[in-house]
Image (tube, rainbow, N blue to C red; front, side, top):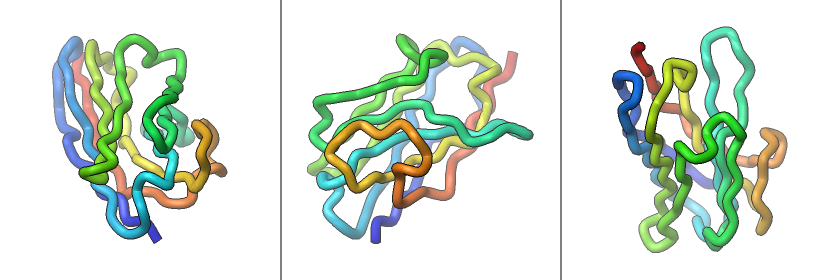
Length: 124
């Protein structure tokens, strides 16, 4: 079992920045690829970014590429998402997730564990 707890969400004006954190506990964090997903009201949960278990490989959905940066600190069992140049369309609940794989995972079904989410609201 892996327990994931997100933090760092909030209300921010368009153009601003937020950094989301995901604290992991339980099984060895470094054995899991990690990802961020988001779900806006009335929409399905969508992939945002992913990182391999070593941190060497990352992947982003096109709409956030160049604005968001995913990173991890395996010594601190922490996953981060730095979000810059935020837009109102980034408003959603953001979830971190863990996948027991050594590859970058971009689909929901690849992930085994999920956090409860943190709300990000970007005002125009």
